Amino acid sequence: MTRRDVFDFVLLAAIWGASFLFMRIGAPEFGPFALIGLRSGIAALCLLPLVFLRDGLAPLRAAARPLAIVGITNAAIPFTLLAYAALSLTAGFSSLINAGTPLWAAVVGLVWLNATLTKPQWMGLALGMLGMVVLTWGKVDFKPGGSGLAVVAGIVATAAYGFSTHYAKKNLAGVSPMTVAAGSQTASALVLLPFTVIFWPEKPPSLAAWAAAVALAALATAFALVLYFRLIARLGGQKASTVTFLIPVFAVGWGALFLGETVTWPMLFGGAIVLVGTGLTLGFGAKPSKSPTASVQKL
Image 1: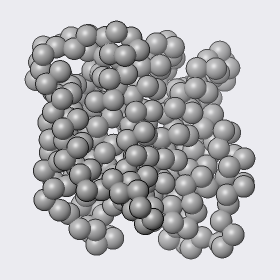
Image 2 (image 1 turned 30 degrees about the vertical axis):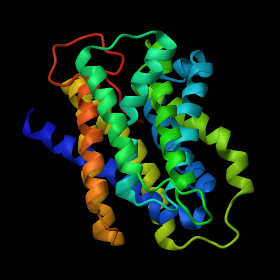
Image 3 (image 1 turned 180 degrees about the horizontal axis):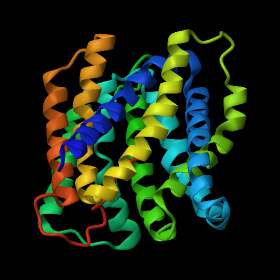
Image 4 (image 1 turned 180 degrees about the vertical axis):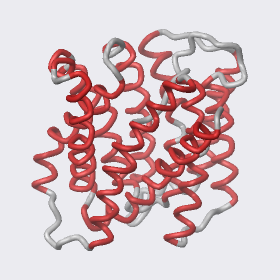
């Protein structure tokens, strides 16, 4: 890596880690639907001009159906579920659950595409699932005021990312990543528009909440995607996707620094197991293969 690559890599991890902080700040005042409606809408407004100037609108129209499905499964559903989880889970905890996305991508690949895994990848999958159990142990409480539904929402969000990863590879292989990003965010915004209107907060959100919402959309979605695709072009998909391992570090740090969130030993231990399992599942350290999860990364 060049110094510029290292800088962009760390910057991307810091920005995506901050997305969990922004959701923690914005979700209580906007609510999950309104916050994510704004996130996708503003992100689409930022990304569409870039696609139009480079390729025009023809690629978007040609791939409208698969882009809509990716928009729903890779943005509308998981973004909203993670925003819901942010109402009761810390930024660091949510980011550690999100780090298990490659595990679910592997499961979807096995069930849907009959994909094969190497022995280290099987070991990583088992280890990652064990880490999830350790991480969420004692958190799955469905009593009033408990965080059980939030934990489930976070896990379902990562499963949706896992499905979308394979669907996009299968149906959008010839479409540029920037077009996929712009089209999917546009589809997500349109799908969420009725819910955004219906669930728009009665009390005007504070300036801090608005700042978090705009930063979540423009910085942690639109700009971060452009930065990520630039890293892919320079480093390749597998190396760029290792940013997955730095995101929770920044998310935990931002949450502790700005919100005073507590970092517990079970959280660190379970998160470490998840990240090690994720690394094995992604095939890092092994020879290049046709792993179904070789270039997994959330949008």
